[in-house]
Image 1 (cartoon, one colour):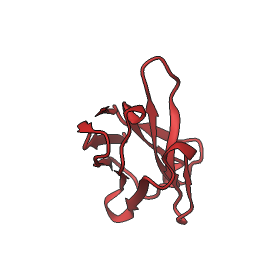
Image 2: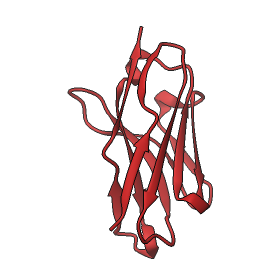
Image 3: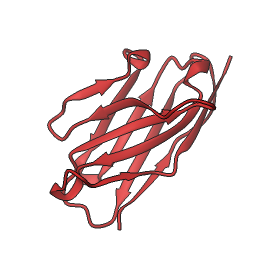
Image 4: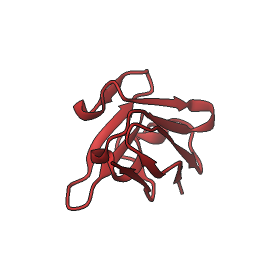
Length: 119
């Protein structure tokens, strides 16, 4: 069974930075895409950033130039460096791995880590 554990959330002032981490454990020998999503109160979950196994990235327009996604394949870990944070970045951030162990239908989610940005 695959488990994802996120860390790094917290309270930060506007303009500050946070780094989220997500480690995947279990029987994993390959992961296609690793990404971050977020859900603000009263809103739907949305894509923040995703990084494929070949290095292609996709960012939400709202975070381009401020957030950077990276991954350590040896550790099955994905990171999200968040700079110049804004109050509208406040949300629960979820880690996702997609298409792991050569099965495009396999997907797993973390439990979420809360990020609060004060103005």
